Image 1 (tube, one colour):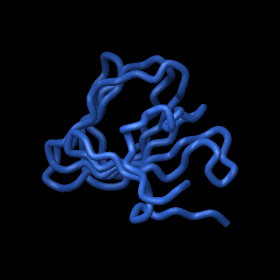
Image 2: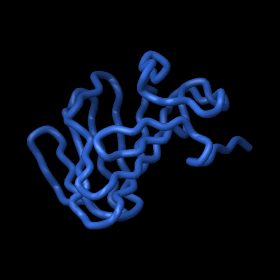
Image 3: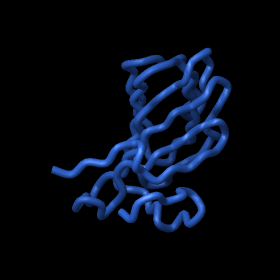
Image 4: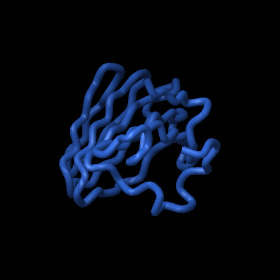
Length: 125
């Protein structure tokens, strides 16, 4: 069994969000997936961005926010899954008074090793 907790995961802090890298390509033998856990403070947001070849899901664990995908916007809350097709611009913003927490998974996995300043690594993965 392979495990990694948020407390030991590499972290990136930006835009009022703490993004923890829980799984990257090659870690634990993983070949087809990258997974992050994100805590977003009230008012925090992820900027609009696009992944050309990766499909991605967001699963809201707690809190509420506004998800934008392409030209669409929708309020999201705990228990909501959002699917983002490859090549679709997307972003999420915390619209609530509490922390918005979501898990994001993408396949094929993004090459996070190419993002040299993206995650401040704690352990060697």
